[in-house]
Length: 387
Image (cartoon, rainbow, N blue to C red; front, side):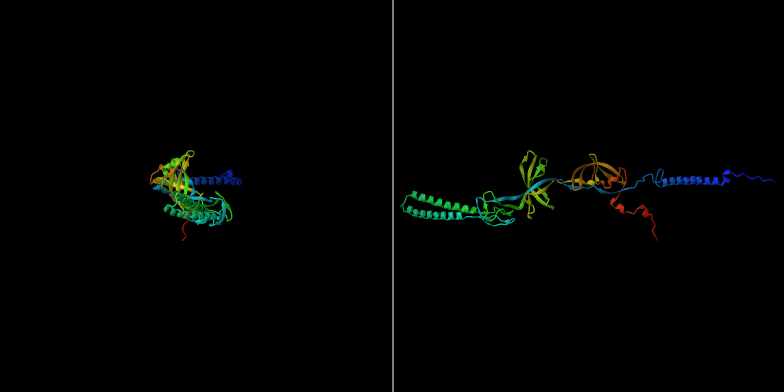
């Protein structure tokens, strides 16, 4: 009985051919599995048709503020110059040698205190001569007055002697005045500047001996534009700062407004009176004067919340569902990093302050952008606790 032996395919019967076909089959299987994995990953990560395709954007962490009306008064700045309430350069009225100096540089003096004594020997001699002549004229007048009462001399002779006596007394007064000019005194109380003379020096009229300033109160003169003239009036309180004392604020009040405006600058000179008990403000110093405006109720917003696009300003306003919308606003006056919102917003609006760079209209936000960095990452929160 014969048995038929099935034929073996050539590809299987040849060991070499089978070895070449296996890598191809394996590559096709790996490629198929990879495509299946990509499709599953697309659905898992919220790609087209994925589970999170309807709002996969995470909320942007930001910081917000709710607008409220605040009291605001915009101020006007001007640069003023300090002037002493009373100021003079002490000089001599006559040409003479300095005999004695009674003060030191920077000394505080009172009105009438002697500052310089000039040589007066010549005037003293003239005074003695004039005084003797005046005494003699007085004796002659008294003697002739007695004779006139006895009608022994004419009345006209008595009148001539009276005139001579008065002239002699006037001469004495004149020399005494010249002697007084030899002692130079402080015309008012104040602080002396640097001493410019020494004993033995020759001084002449016009030569500076020292400066004298009354610094108990000082003036600050500053220009004010014509358009701002309605802001100031006599008695209005103002403040000032000096570069030398940046941490100090000096309080003053408007004392005088000039009657004329400068036709070239259209500005008026305003004089303010400042108390200076500590003698910190000195003549010639520059002071930045702040003239406050009229107080009003406004909406104030931090400047960093505004986004500038061309000439327009925008802010992000938060809706009740924590999404944002871009709102055009009109800015007003500014003060210390804050800006007045003149139009576009109302009290109670919730505005994004920090984090606006990543926002787009319609995007969602979460409060507390500054603390979001400290929150644990998703990978860290997925780690199970040990135990």
